[in-house]
Image (cartoon, rainbow, N blue to C red):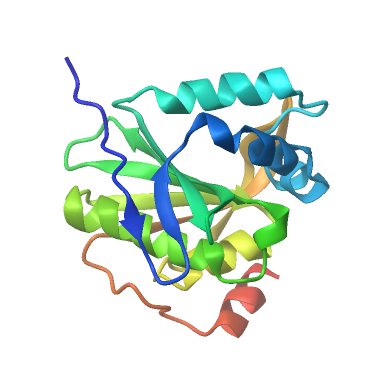
Length: 193
């Protein structure tokens, strides 16, 4: 039997990462109905409360394939961040995250990314963490860039969103890499723009 990935509480200066709980339901539903969230994620259009309940129920069960944290700021749900394990020797996984609209632009996701990347590479000893995002999702790209992810590469038809392939960006951070930007943000924008 494969051991479930642990989802311990991780404390930062601004955020507290914790396991999801049923009381996150209303805020998760708000997040999923937000137009910007729908633009940059695979969340189905016409999202319902029943879908949010099913989503949360899945996160409440320990899994060997996904570790998912609720992001909390001042006692309120502020988003979700997760690691999805890849079946490779040495450990690796995909990083995914989404911020509740009320908490955008406050550094919430930047801090959450740092905590979760540290968990994967340091505590779990994974060899790498990979991030993928839709082309044009500058907020997500900046959150990972701040923690040392290299300039993403452009990959046509990388992501599947509601039955359509969409172009994406991808970047991989290795365990031995510095956890600080390797180039200025202007250089990232120029490379991707």
